[in-house]
Structures are given as structure tokens and as C-alpha cells.
Length: 174
Image (cartoon, rainbow, N blue to C red):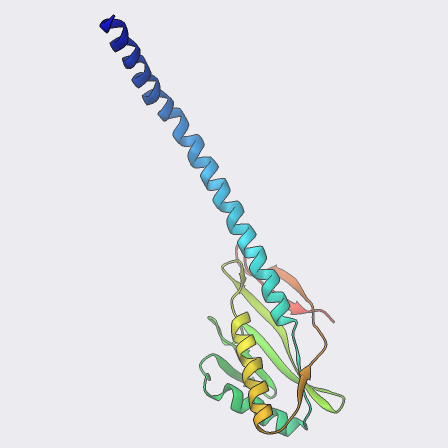
């Protein structure tokens, strides 16, 4: 009886060893596929959040010179992140100075501050929090000067061709 028990135990151990050799590659493929799906889902969620942030615009109800002064003051303390690209154009830097390009444009009796283009890094835009920060700084500076700021029209964007293996530049829809 003991011999049969040891024989059965040996067969079970042998089956586990042989089964593990075949099971490991299958488990690795399954885990890799699940990780890739989760990564794509995460990137898509980040893109949607960024599009909502970048689509938010501000109307500064002031003449062009005063709106430019408000913007200049708002970006002063973070001039490393918010760079002047000339005229009424500001760049938000993640890696390059023009990763996100923002313009201050006339809009009736006000000035409109909006994102024109932005670039993806690592599969999704990285500068949305900086754009939100700049908007809040502009709003605070305008309020300190007694200048009203309201929400402007929402903007939408289209993804351009790939710049590398997975990243592209997005442009505002006309």
C-alpha cells in the first residue's frame, strides 16, 4: 500500500513539473496581454481628460495690452514651464518649449486665451495640469486687477500624424 501511495505522489509531482513548463509561457502571454490592454485603457482615459482640459478657454474682458500684462504676470513665477514664444503666444514645456502652444486672441470686446496645439509624450498629453494651472493663475491675476474673466467657447482637437512610434501633435479644429 505504501508503494502505491509513493508512486501516486511521484506521478503528481512529475505532472506538476511538466505542467509548469507548459503553463508558464501561457501565463506570461496572458499577463502581458492584460497589461497592454490596461495601458491602452489608461492612456485613452488620460487623452479624454486632457482634451476636456485643453478645450477650456478663458475670455479676459480687457483691452489687449492689459490682457497681455495679466498673462505675463501670471506666467512670471513659473517662467521655466510657461515660455514666451513671441507676441501673444505662450509655450508650455514638458520637454520642448512648444509642447503646448497657447494664444491670446481678440474676441469681440475681450481677449480669448486658448490652446492651439499640443504634443503627446508616452501615449498621451502631459501638459494638461500646467494649462489648468496657467488658467487659474490668469484668473487670479485678473481678479486682483478687477478685470472680469469668463469661460470662453469650448475648443475641440484632432490628432495629427505620428511624430514617432506612438506620439502625435494635436491641432485645434477650425
